[in-house]
Image (cartoon, rainbow, N blue to C red; front, side):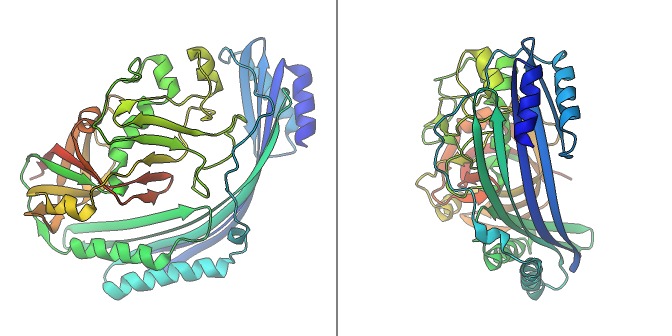
Length: 426
């Protein structure tokens, strides 16, 4: 089918690309202490891109029988598409990265149900009043990309993920704690994840007040997205090309403290966003974005790279990152806490408030955070916000932790900031 689609598209366009993705998935989900559903699904996705009269058109479908209509739609949309100043890539050498484990697909749905039940029982064993939500699931599939430049590449992928969380209501006080982990192999330990959630509940048993002022803030790996979201947007080649990014024109400048390095790396074996090529058939790679505080690179796809006079970094289409890695430092989490006379530890935040994310401004509610006094975690901070600017905070990093953790496709250590504005409500 995909060969036929490319043949038809190539006859009607200057250049054409067709990708076909097939996937299978099984998951089990618990809500409010009960098994809610077990799902088994299969999907097929056909995408077509064409260059007609120098313009790019694209269309896609989940119905593999609609080959001719999706091609016709892509050609029609090319009339209104952007200028295509690039050619589809030809055959290339791709990195040998492991993305598929056949054991994932062998996991029966009964085992997924049992994983959720195990985590639920552990949480209820700690406190039966906690309403538990949990889930476990896997997906696997293959993608093939063909184009009129002679590219024919395919790869297999698998994912296995679990998540656990709970809600505890005490009068008007509602506390939510959650954790999740996924990998391309079935190596995630449900007991470890449940025990992490239990530890967070333990730390939150006592509510303590916090003053509204500037103070040191420690971000756990789960809270690192406060910094990374603006960085992702700022280093996206499309935003740089449009001039929207505050980092445009600042390559090779110092934008963060020494010791802070930030990498896009799709070549890590079995990591969630690893792959040998991107969605355009360009070889994936390891791109140091920030190297010891210095801005080193932006992420590009074929279209933006051609307009910026550079090469694609293998992040197409859309200049989206793969695995994001903050290099670990040399300070333990325990030392970060013990060296803090007064500050807060942020585990989770709720949304991004009224933030101007592109410019790096943020003002976020701390949905789960803890007060640190005299080097010890003394209890949960309730009804508080943290505010600041990402690009200012990056220059005020006091310490980068030595213990990194994966959260989805982000690998990060804890980070201690010299100060952020903490606002206590009420």
